[in-house]
Image (cartoon, rainbow, N blue to C red; front, side, top):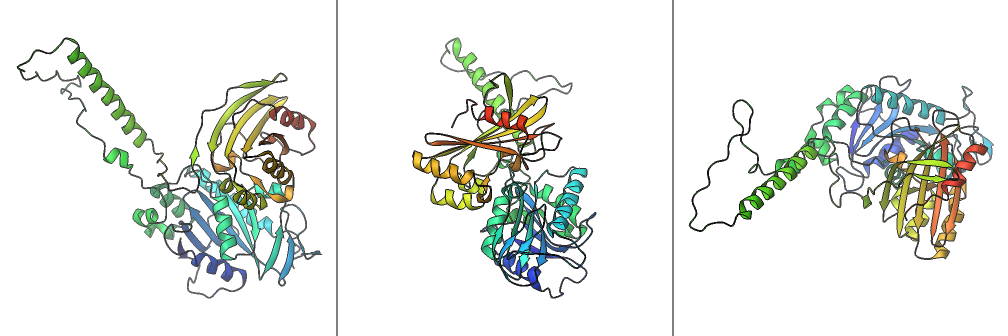
Length: 437
């Protein structure tokens, strides 16, 4: 990761939690060995009401970091996004009367998201880290807040790195050229960064290697008026060909031409392919499940994926548990439902080697304080007219032998309450959808 110091005086000394945050980032070093990306320190994006401690631009996400200095070290911090923060059981109140330090961080992240959307820049998810200090042993966050892409933590190097990897989950790496536009939108002074420097930090090269290496031997010739040129006469051969041989040769040439055009079209589509072995997770985008009807309710598929490793797709205590108890398969799907109003449904199916592991996983998944598994929407798999997030949501789980199913349902464009009986009915039906995994 490359650090870029901005602010009125980039050489000025910083203290408190901001200094701890910078120290954590600096330990990762340049390049992609640990994280990659560009960290803009002490920058004020257009529309932001205050300087931000950092804006971290990663190949698969953008993270706004805001520091909060507590009155002193703490053993336990209760940090909900809605409501009063408490330090070791005591309410945290600032001199200006602000009850929740996360409000400023969420406002800054929202302003940055709106700016990137207005300028039609690569739609990387914008997440938030609230760094607290001078020291906190344990931070308690509701699971719904974690699903919104917000982490409250003491900025130790390992804690910061884990949060950054959890939050940078976009389905494909941002290209170096798109990253330059994004960085320039955040602060014009970053225009000096070259595409080569960004590629060294993990951003995808804008030039696809498939196009650079494509063979042009089979590209047909054309006349000046745009019509295909007549083929050159074949040289005489001593042996007479069988009648089907020329036709077979033309068929093979035509097939090769179709493959070449497909390769060039894919290379020019602007969506760089993920390099083999370059990601932390082996992810395959599987075919969407068929449209299904359960108790008269139609579930229209909006995306699906299958992976072999669950740990990197989880967060909170559930992530650590999955690293110690690996799953055998992870299938995630999205659906749209019309029941009085439009609803969106996320279905996650986690498979294990035995039923005991599945039972323990379900017990953790039912606990709001234990974290969860990212929905596909969180990793950039949205659709026109779909929801912006699955938080808050009506959640439900079920277990079938070695498989655990996690369902989250929300209204699209309207407020979702966890006590909504209609959404509860939708979630219950989603537990019975015929899905693979």
